[in-house]
Length: 208
Ligand code: GRF
Image (cartoon, rainbow, N blue to C red):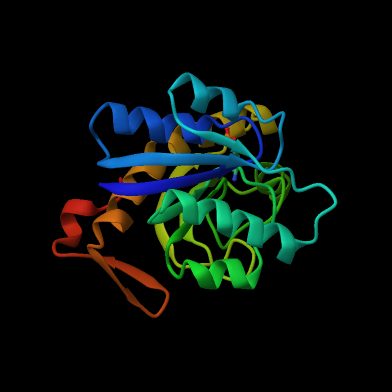
């Protein structure tokens, strides 16, 4: 059983998707705690409705090191194995990342390394790509840059707006995040350089 800590800042639809996958028995994990740096995050309500402990740790006005130490202290109480960033809108400090080496995942709404940072769907539309998608990756000390666990691709249609493209990508986010957690939580992968190689049978775990 993987003990998860989920960090959010807002809507929390990925949190919902992870919780739903656990409920359906597709992911052997338990969300020990949801932590939001914003009291108004809608995702807190999703968590409470499901009986998941939901903690607000307001970040406003705190420097990164101070805040991240508070986060580390809170997470330690819940003894989580894996941290999932799900729309968590703050950068993590190097000391936080070092406390959970290869144990922090993020989901990003583009096919990394294209369009890191904010407004990835807008960036994709403005650039004119014909395909975009989403990426679950390990978090390292740079922005949206750690080794990639899973990706999913969606087409960009001529009539797309940021909203319609975001919705198409979000459906894929909800599908792949739980799968990526299952892979990482099982420990059945190895790193070759930046490449995350699934074990023992890569064919069985292939994204698709
Ligand atoms: C998602 O698009 C995710 O890829 C990005 O932030 C958004 C969070 O949405 N990192 P939600 O809060 O999970 O609904």
